[in-house]
Every structure is written in structure tokens, then in C-alpha cells.
Length: 533
Image 1 (cartoon, rainbow, N blue to C red):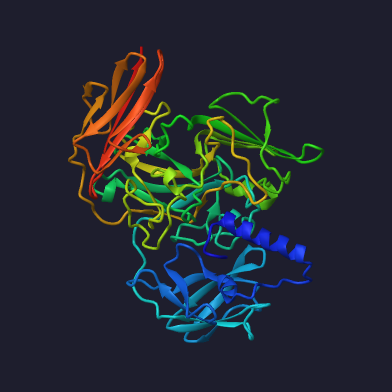
Image 2: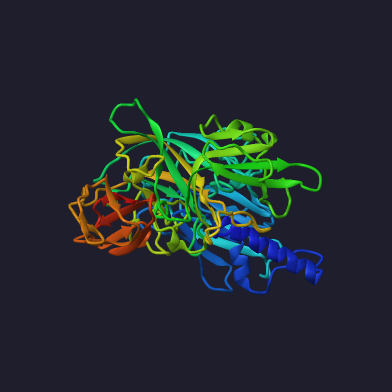
């Protein structure tokens, strides 16, 4: 498995296959560039190790740590078209086959007890011998100690990896049928889970307190499989409590930066239907308002290659792993994901500034938050979430004390033209978020915000409160929302700006969220409900 996104790996494999057919080659032959063979030996993206080759035409590589203070004794090594399993040829350790990550690409668990050398032999390699050596340092340091989930409650994808194994498996052995130990419970896993099309999810049991003293107010971090220029955004719902007791819990959305935008679809049910035979064989989708009835005449074909292999069959183990999760209903031929939000599907990382998983590169310092309000397209640190973003079904802010469950689901689905239609998946697969880990947060930030920005709507200065909501009635028209005395990271809905316009018609209500943040303190967050009259 290469250190690139799952979908792009599949694209690369398919393109290679097409080129080989066109060239009428009788067997798999790789290009004469030595670096192609280097790409066939890799460590999972997000692990605290990477391979540094001595040169483009060198068979010698060094497994280097991305964090000088920590070198793990166990990691996952991927090898495409290996001529036998890799072996420890000096030092002490073992190499054990784990599972087939994808066709001709095998995952091996490497355990080293000392400095060691790993020998890898490739088939059809461009090197004369096909033998590559990897030099490893002795393990040292300790892995991050941030909180981990205590349970994985459910998982149900619809998509190209919904096949019960590899990225479609919830278990460490790479299969839903024989696995006994679930991924994520011991930390980051380089082969996580692919959530599939819009609504597909994984749910964790995990107690997290709403702590404004955390760096930037971030309360937990989700690590995906992202790289710059190909986000596959996932939204997050949490089972939260308004008070310190454990009574009165409820599911709430953590509203990301696009939550209040016009293209975003909120409180929707998304259903998928499988037709197994006949001219209409394939997978279809339908989106309705939450609680609405399905219309037999409004199914739209989703899977353009007409394959039904994207369906999570009970025979692949999904009957036992999808769990009794509320808001998810599964029958033999219809799956409905209820009460979710859907955002535009783009290839621009910056379009999903905060509040979405599988957007920013993981890095390896798990549990250390980066500033979600100032993260760049190539920032490393995963995607942090603040419980202060919690909203009810009407988009109103909810002040939570703590949560006990986290549900991550694919939400990037909508065409950016505002048509309300899904983007069409290609033969290379649907937009599918991946999850490789979830952690609590280490460290202490600058504490709760001391900001008290002045916010105006047109010529009116509004009286706002942190984590509160204020109503403001106006005549129909366009008004400038302006922020002064705010932090350097100020957002008006999805725009990072001190001023942004909002247009409201008679009888229309618009919600505008203002977030202002500085340093490593938690943000000032308030919502303005603008009512046209």
C-alpha cells in the first residue's frame, strides 16, 4: 500500500492495468525508473515512520522516525508483488503476514526488538537482483498517551471497499468474518476503515469532556487517510450530555465550517437501494427530509459501473458489525442513514477548514492538536473537533458537558452547483472518508477565550454572548455582518473574514455563526438568527 489516498491508489492500479492491456504485455512489467519499485515498498501514511531511500537508483532505504523522541517497535509494512515475505536479516525481530490490503499488495506486521535490517524481494523488479534492504533503528520512547476509544459500536459502508476485508473490515486481521479484535482500540491503524458513500459511518464509544482549556478548545482528534488536494470529508455527530450526570443524553451534530452554507443539506435521510438482476441492476440513492417517505419514482442511479459489489452483504460479515445504531436501518436491499448533513464534494482541502474528518494530513504526533482555524492545506495533525460546535436539529448552539459516543460519517456528496444532486462516482470509486484513529487531546492551551468581539449587522451593534444565540429582525435585503476587536482567526460562517454579507427575504430566517479565536485559547462562538420581515 502506497502512502497515498485509497481512491487514488485504485486509480493508479486501474491506469496501470489499462496500459498493460493496450501494450499487450503477457505479464506484469514495471517502468524502468527505479523509483517505481520504491513506491512498491511503503509504510502506512500517518504512522510515525517513513522510508528514506539513499537515491533514486538505490536498493537501500532507511526507516526514519518523523518524531525524534519516538521510534516504535511495531509497524505495518506494505509490499506490492513480493517474491516471498520480507525477512529480518540482522538484529532481532519478526515479520508476520497480516492481510491483503488490495490486489497484489500485502500488509506485514514488523516487530523489532533492536536495530535491524529488513530484506524485501520484489517480483519483476527493475533492479538486477530485485532485493531491497531497509535499515531500522532500535525502538525507543513511548507512544502518545492521549485517550483512546473504549469500544467500536458499529460500522456500515456502501462503496467500493464494502467487501468485508481490508479497508472494509472492522477487525485487525482484515476480515469481518474471522476477526475478533477491533481496530482503533489500541490506537492508530494504518489500514483503518473506508466509510463508503454519504452516510456510511463508524461509531465509537468514547467519553470526552468539553474542556475549553484544551489547545484551541479541541476536545478530540480524528485521523483519516488524507493528503493535500484530495479531501473526502466526513461529518461528526456526538452523543452528548448538557450536565455532568449521565442522564438525558442526545445525539448532536458538530457543525463544521460549511454547516450554515446554502449548498449544505441538513437534517436529511439518505437511502440506498440494491437491484441485483435485470437491466436496472446496480445501486440507487434517494435523499429525503428527515422522517420523509421514500418515492418509488425518485431513485437515482448511484454506482455508474452497475456493479452491486459495493453493497455490504450480510455474508461479508456486515450483519454482525453494523450494530444496533440508531438512525441506521438496513434490510436486504435498502439501507437508510437518517438525520445527517451533506456538504459539497470538492478536491480543495481548504474548502473544509474545520469540523470535518479526513481532510488534513495525519502526521504522527497523535493526540496533539493543531489549530483548526488556522490549518493550511498541507498542515499535519489530523482534524480536531471542539464540543463547542454542537448544535441541535435547528442549528442552535448546545452547551455540552461531555459526550460518550462519536459517530463519523461521510458527508461530502453534493454538487457545488446547488442542484441538490450527488456527485457521480466514477469507475475508480465514490467519495469515501477513511478513519484510521481517534484520540483525546494532550496538553493545555491558553485557556478559555478572553475575546469579546463587537459584532454588527448593518448599522446595528448586536449584544452577543459566547456560545449563545441572538435574534435580530430586519427588513428584507442584504446586510454586512462585521466583526471588530476579534481574534486573528475570525470566521463568519465558512468565510475567514471580519466582514461578510447576508441576504434575507421576507419570512426567511438565516443563521450566521461568528467564531473568533486567538493563540491557543478556545474560541468565542456565537450565532445570530436574522429574521426577515
